[in-house]
Every structure is written in structure tokens, then in C-alpha cells.
Picture 1 (cartoon, helix red, strand yellow):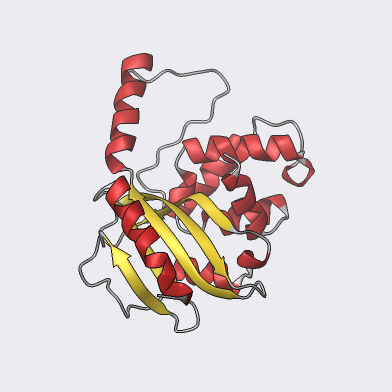
Picture 2 (picture 1 turned 90 degrees about the vertical axis):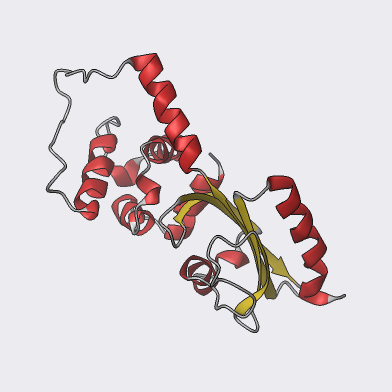
Length: 209
């Protein structure tokens, strides 16, 4: 066993340790397909399946040239289950990308538990604060809700978005992550545009959470 296949025993180990809530996948970037998967969430996702959009985006953006891995980003399964994900870029001795290893972990039950704990700690009655922005969300699209949440969170800082310091940007991203913003498609690109930075930089901040 050599090359990309040499990672298969490690993937089997990760899958056994993390359990069935963790999908562990190995991709061959030269063949652009799955070469091994354990605990697949979708039975149609198997050896020979194409590389998904998220990993393809990392590759096309050249993120692997700057980072060895991306951890704790948010994604959805094909069944719309919320996932916490991590991707490691496998390179040869010439630092050329030859494969990608991704772990997807289901977090729906953990999010429900967090919501229960929040209700137990803070109570379930809504509290109205003077100066707080409240809005009816039933008629908002996901994009509207995402933008409103980002803009509302930015009001916690006393400078324009592009002038936020490194620590302030990290705190902003932590706050947005806690509100679930990064579970929404397009949130990384939208925040990068608002902060006048790259999507790669946003992923780098998320890695630090």
C-alpha cells in the first residue's frame, strides 16, 4: 500500500474512534473522486463519487498552498443535517496536492442540547432591550436573515468593518459562528466582501476559534 492509499488504515481508525456520527472520506485529487469512505451519510456517496463542492472550492481557491488543513467549518449533509467539518490537504514531497481527507461530524443533537441549556440558563421568555434591533423573520429569505445578522453583529464594534483589528475580526467571527451564520450558504463570501478581505482569510479566522 503506497501513495494516497496509505492513508486508508488511518481513516478506518478515525471512523472507529469517532463512531457512526462521523463520516470520514479520502479523495484522490488527481482522479477527482472518492477513493475510500467510512460511515457514509448518503448511501449513494461511495468510492468513485466526485469530489463535493466544498472541497472543490478549497482546491480551486488554492487554499492548500497556504494551509495544511481547515478545521471547524460548517456544512450540511445531503439530508440537510448540520455538520462540523475538517479537511486536511495531503501533499507529496514537492508540496503538490495529491489528496484530501475530510471528516464530517453530525452536530444537530449537540445544537439541540445547547439550545436546551440556553433555555435552562436564560429562560424561555423573550427580553426586550432598549436599542436592540428586533425584526420579524418569517418573510425574510436566508440571504436576508444572514445579512441582517451580520450587520446587527457589526454594531457591537465602533469602527467600520474594513478597519476592524485582527482581534476584533476574530471576535466578530466567533459571535457569528455562535449565531449559526456559517451554516448558511454564501456566508463566507458575504462576510469577506463586507470586511474587504478574502474567503481564505475568513476560513483562517474560523480555524482559530
